[in-house]
Amino acid sequence: MMRRGIGRVGRPSLIGTMARTAVVAGTATAVAGKVASSQAEKAQVAAEAQAYEQQQQQAAIDAQVAAQVQAQMAAQQQAAPPPPPPAAPAAAPAGDDTIAQLQKLAELKAQGILSDDEFAAAKAKLLGL
Image (cartoon, rainbow, N blue to C red; front, side):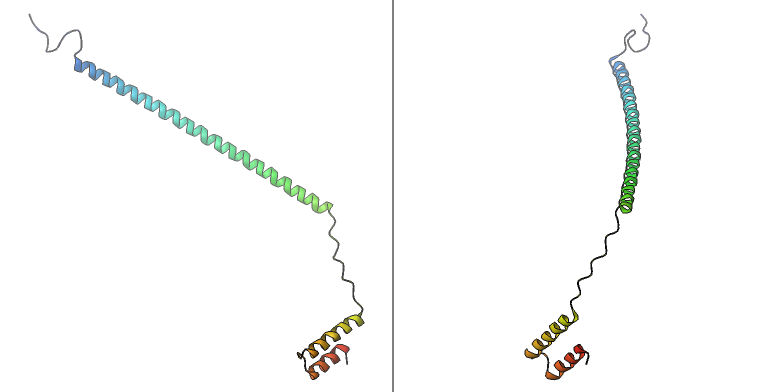
């Protein structure tokens, strides 16, 4: 009886089976990781493309809205007549104004704020003397 080599013939050893299983499992994990990575990268590219497209659409909408607002403002400015100038206050007769100022000067003199000379000077200036 002659033996051929040191191991069994026909079936692999337990260590051989474990090694083969580890290689198959490692290969499967590596392939699955690569596939998942590739899919994630494709999804990221698609998401970025979609975000860019949405930004472009939003920019176009914003431009349209701005153009419409400007057109409306221009139409309103052309359609609306300019506001009338404010009405001038009714001028009081000069005599009433002079009398009111003289009364104020008399009150200031009565309160002691103006002296006799100051009162006389203000009165003369007011009356144009």
